[in-house]
Length: 333
Ligand SMILES: NC(=O)c1ccc[n+]([C@@H]2O[C@H](COP(=O)([O-])OP(=O)(O)OC[C@H]3O[C@@H](n4cnc5c(N)ncnc54)[C@H](OP(=O)(O)O)[C@@H]3O)[C@@H](O)[C@H]2O)c1
Image 1: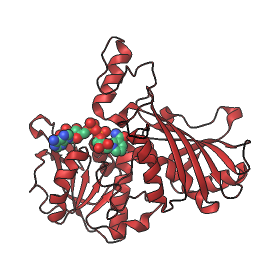
Image 2: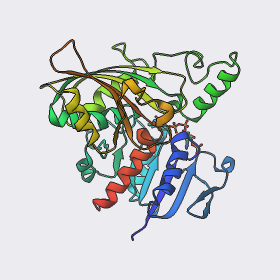
Image 3: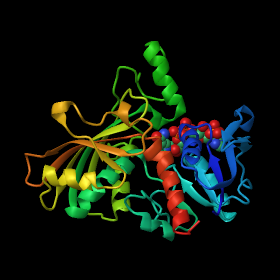
Image 4: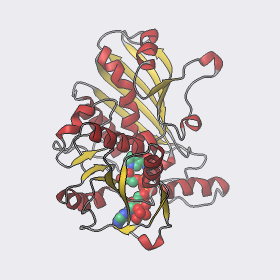
């Protein structure tokens, strides 16, 4: 089997660490693995497929001989370094927001739009974590009855804000006087309706990402999305309350049937038995979990759903590696 030289950029980050784990778990056909850091001297020695790997410094000329670059160092770093990697023949799968809405860059969730991968010109963008899990669940419903409108409220875990944010929740939970740094208010014992920077229209950038990215991935500007994104004191896995209005009726039974057959979806839906997805159960899992499926009794063609997925896995690292697997399958690496 052909092997591919792979680079992980942002190795000490929450997503970078998860990428290393998942490459190993899925037995990805890695030839050389380069892990790149802003500060390799502070990195431990990593272990991968029985090898010891030392981190190297992220640099413009660090990508010679690399086939696939898995980037998660933050948007400004990707902006600077991705073009150099592409120039050296590397296909970059970028987790940051830097290239997602660029019309020349496919924005891909493999369960939804794998066909977009082959149009890449060196960069494939990984969507925002909240968007990924929502479109995985909405796609089979949209294919059956096109969705007109989505109203989503998110309950996002702190790991969505990176490794330091996980530490902040842990410290604050043990010591309530620990001051906020990654968040606007203490996150322990609290919820904060503010993720990413404010926009002129009084939404946050996280909310705007959900609106724009959903239409791009589903290739349908008729899907109107309105979002409220909220940070909650959960370590890993984002939850979403999603209300949709469709162009024709989807009964609860039909939704259960469609979602049970959908790739990457697990339905957990038996309220009388306390069965519905919760973040603690989704942590460390690959699927997107859907439950609390109800017909919206206030409109003719509406459904309510509760959608939960591990944001570091399906929301970031796993989706990126699934894109890489699809890239290889389509012989587009
Ligand atoms: N967390 C999620 O659920 C999630 C989901 C989807 C997308 N994303 C996106 O993925 C990216 C990383 O998120 P994260 O949660 O992993 O954040 P994080 O834990 O804060 O890690 C970010 C990493 O970026 C690297 N970095 C920062 N400055 C750098 C520099 N000057 N040069 C090289 N590397 C630098 C660092 O890696 P080194 O320590 O190795 O230098 C750092 O550990 C962000 O753009 C985020 O929006 C995150």
